[in-house]
Length: 426
Image (tube, rainbow, N blue to C red; front, side, top):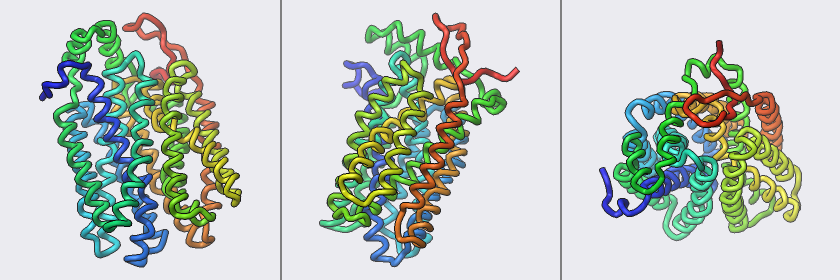
């Protein structure tokens, strides 16, 4: 399917916008906005923080489904997968106003997380890798900045609707937005290699066509990756890094309020982190083209570790803002770097399948982090200890990524050698 008005511009740009919105709104509505709904839900239903946080642990569903979603996207294409995934997320939001029992909250949260792999990391990796092969790092940074766009816009939107109407109407609004985006994706997304090559030639990008075709065929298989030491080191590094999402980000707003921030200032702090992330993603995405995605990720996680340490240890507002600033510098870039590290290490040949396996490993962070955070909060009255535990996990991830040293291999379809973290086992 085509949209006539798209014929006048390079098709990669509207595709990038749709993927930008898909990943950004999904993350913004689910993770950044989680704290906006926590108070109203606990007040109405009497749930504890542990019970509420358990819904975040249902992100293990994303990890379980990711290999299948990745394999399916490799086989039938990302467009139908993305459409269905966005509808699943929309359904999870649209049904939440019907909640009367705790298990309803968990069930509808499961629907949202079932749609996550096919609405976020899979389309980002596929579309950017295919449509922008020569500037993958910087475009990846720009597209994944959608996460921060979602972080800037969705919490205030949720807060405004909750304050003026209700939390039910806020979720209904989220669901309608995601359903509409799914319909748009069905018309805009294109991934056929011949169509991509034709589009590149039509718009004077013929030099990219050969690069794009070679990139789609370069890399190692899932089987080869599993037999490679670097696969496991990269997985440890990325799993550790992703503890920041469910273990830190979703708890920050409440932590800020408990540390003395007013509700409005706490929401502003989250928006500041999201806003800083836009520049961070652009910077780290561009840097990955020069210093490698692996090194850029080490820097990103290191900054987050320092920022979370400060946030957990201080009470004074000025020092808290220092921690917010340092954390924001590193946090933003991670969203782009996760995909770039996998592509850099293992190529695009079976990207979906390998990325899916990485997300299986991320079950540890998605499930364990919110449960620990909730339990620690209920027993101690704060998130300080759980944040310090995450700092220790960050250190483990940094060490793993340092050990995953790059290896020079020759790509027979390219004009120059490429740096990769892996090579097939003999």
